[in-house]
Figure 1 (cartoon, rainbow, N blue to C red):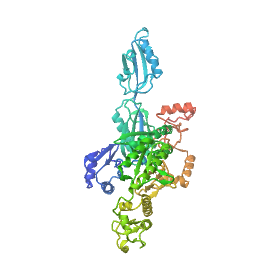
Figure 2 (cartoon, rainbow, N blue to C red):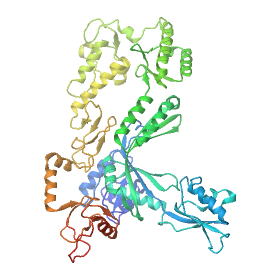
Figure 3 (tube, helix red, strand yellow):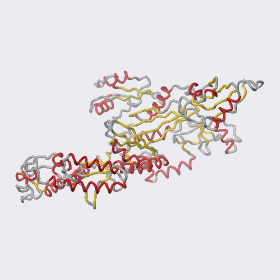
Figure 4 (cartoon, one colour):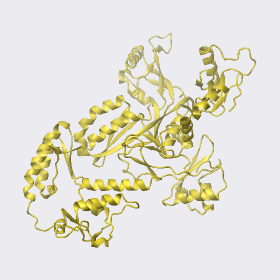
Length: 637
C-alpha cells in the first residue's frame, strides 16, 4: 500500500482494512515511513492465498483515496527452491563511514619516528588498511627531548583507541591517543533505516541485510526487491545521491546478478581444484565466487554487475558441478541391476579413491555421472565398464518371478491389436506395444485441448487417465523426457496469451506475460542466456519504459530530440526533467531534484558556490556578463 497519508501508522492501516471487512493483526503489517515523500507505505502479509487478490480489489473499489496505490506482491520461492536460478533483483549499497584525525603521543622522538616509518612503509596498519601519517613534531618546540606527537588522518571513526595502541610493540607504543571529532555524527541503525527507506520509495523490498566489519571504511548492505524493474530504477535514481545524514558523502548503488548452487561435500572436494584457477580469472572480470558449508552440502554463489562475464562463469560452473555422463565408444554406461550386490558398491568406491573422482548413479536419467579432474574421466569409464561386464552374468536367470512387462507379452496391444512387441501393462490391466504407447502419448500432445493421456483399452471404453508417475515408470527416461517436452509444447500452444519463450533464438526458457492492469510490468531475466525482456511488450528495452521504447522504435524520439534542441531544452542529468534557460547566468538549479547544474556542460554540483567556481575555471566566466540578473535562474518545466 503506497501513498498513505503522512500521519498513518500500522494501527490506521489495520482500521482501514477492517472498514472494508478484512481482519488482520498488527503483527501482519509492516509500516514504513518514507523519507523522500514524507508519506507512508505498508506491506501486509497474511497466510491466506486469496488475501492479496481480495484486499487489492476491495481497496480499489471501496476506498475513496485517489492517491492510494495497492499492489499484489508475488509469493517468494520457498527456501532452497531457487538454486540454479539467476536472481537479478539485488542492489548492493555502500557509503563511507565517518572518519576522524587523531594524535599519537610518544615519550621521545625515537619512538615517534620509528612508528612513523613503519606506518609509512605499511609495516603497520590499522584495521587492515594503510594509514596516512604526518611527520612527527615535538609537543613543545623548546624541548626537543620531551614528548613528541604524530597525527594520523582519515581513520574510520568507529576504531577504538585500544585497537590503535595494540598495533605497536609494547616498547614503542604511544602513551596517549587523542581522538579528533568525527567527520559527521552517525547512528548505524538509524542510517541503515534511512537508506532502506529511500529504497522503499522506489519499490518494496523482499530482503535487506547490512554486512561487513564495523571498522571497515564503507558500510555495505544488500537489498533484494520484489521486482527486477524496481532494482534497476533504484540504481538509476539513487546512485551517487547525497546521503541524507552526511551532506558531503554519497550513496553508491550497484545492480547485482546472483546465482546459487548446492552440491554435496564429496562432489565439491573433487571439483574444488578445477574451480580454484577459474576463481582468479573470474575476479579479474569482476565476477565473485564464494562457497559456504551447510549441513553436508556446499552452497556455491556467483555474483557480478556485468551480465556477459557472469553468464559465462555460470555456464562454466554448471558444467563442472553437473558432472559428465560416462560413456565408452559412444555407448552410455548403465546397468539396471547395479544395485543387486553390495560388493559392487565397494568396487565402485575403490575406483573413486584410486582415481580421485566421484561417480554418481543417476537412476532418474539412467546414467552414471563422473566428477573430478577431466584427465581421470576416461580411466574411470574404462574401470566402470569392466565392472558392469563382470556383474552382468549375476543378474541373468536368478529372478524366476515374471515381471509385469513379461506377463504383458501374453496379450494383444490395445492400439494395433497385434501381439504386443516389447509389451508393457498399465495399472488398469491393458497391454501396449512400447512404440504404440509412446506414439499414443505424442499424438495426444498434438491435440487441441488439455493434455491428458487416457487408456484406450477395452476397445476405447477404458478412458482411465494414466498418472504421470506411472508413465515415468513404464518408459525409459529419454522417451519419458520427449513425452514431457511434447506435453509442455502443447501447453504453450494453448496458453499463448499467458506465456512466451525467451526472444533469444534456440533458447527454451519461458516467462509469464504481464497482465494489462499491472502498474509496473515485471522484467524477465532469462536464467539461461540472461537476456532481459519486458513482460508487457515482449522486447528488451533496459532502463526504458515501454512508451520510451515505442517512441524510439517509431522515430518519435528522434523528432522529440530535434524539437528540444530547436527550443533550447535540455534534460537534468540527475532526474531527466526537461529544463529551459531563458536568461541569466549558466548556473541552473533544478527545482525537481535540487541539483546545481552548469548549463554549458551539464555537470552537477553539491551547491551553487562549487558551480560558480567550475564555470570560472573551465568556461572563463559565469555567462551573465553585461546582465544585471540574479545568480539563480528561473527554471521552466
